[in-house]
Amino acid sequence: MNCCSKILVLSFFAFLCAGLVSSQEGSFKKSKKDRRPSDEDAKMMKILERSFKLADTERDRFIRELVRLDSTEALRVDFKQWFARLSAGGTTWERGKFERQNIMELFDRAAMRLKLDGNTITRDQFFVYANRYLGSENSPYWREPKENASSKEIAKVFEHFDRDNDQFLKGDEIPTSLQTDLARWDKNGDGRIDSDEYRAYFPESYERVRQQMLNSGQGMPGQQPVETADPDTGIAPAKLPPGLPRWFAEVDRDRDGQIALFEWRKAGWPLDEFGTLDINDDGFLVPDEVLRLLATINRDGTQPFEYLMKKTTAKTSSSLAKKSLGGRK
Image 1 (tube, rainbow, N blue to C red):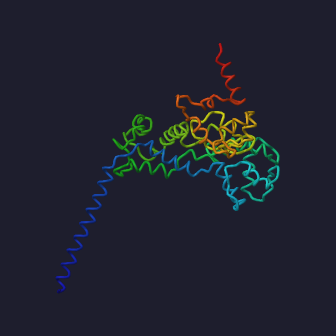
Image 2: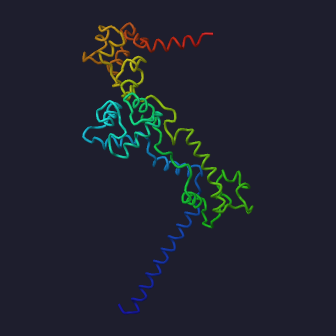
Image 3: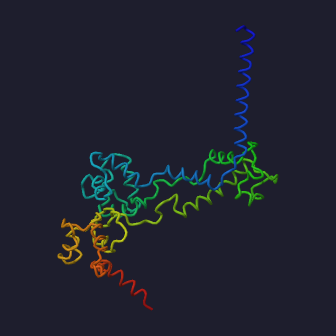
């Protein structure tokens, strides 16, 4: 192939490449131009969700430091075990027990919650704090997630709606919530929103979405504390299947999801009845056994263990009595 032929081939190849690049750029610009803006609230929600995800809860902090204190034994959902680590097996948790800043910060947080001034937290005091603030569903954030979006985040939202990249939001580029109050934020009255005007508008709308998120419980779980551990034992309750009698959870004092003979006896109920209900005779009543008994049907259609649903403890009876008295006129 002579020199002229090579030049012609190379020129043709270059022309084809240029055409392909130009076609791809046109396709990209077209896809961006045709892209419809998503709902503004959804964009704000994503910013909020990222903020919430970055925030540790008090429970997260405790678990991380408790694991560091003793990595040889698995950490359980057992506040007794947690206190044993913090107190080094003692009867009180001393602030200076461990010369680690993170542990002292945990102590200070618990003391603040309990409104304590000293350098000692007792076992019972820790259980009060843990029950209220260290449950999987009721632990508050260690630090509140940031309330305001950053300038960079606001700029990204603005760029998302500015589909033609002319640094203005106009026509259908303006989000619906902003269109309804355009005169208020369009300071120069030109019917467009520039980046400065959008930056001034954004915090108010962002706070509205944030409050909706908080009120719905999405961002800040557990605003209403729930009981997650027994006040006496410090042990979180096992998850029980539906359909069990109410007394099952009340008699299960150690919250291990089963009823031992000593717990049955403590409820003041006959031991021979326990023996009848304990199908496998292992000294424990488990949810499956009770549910199987409740499902038993005689040939005549009667349910011999239906009475279990009506069985009451002293706690249940007291609660029912209060309801009864409260319903009287």
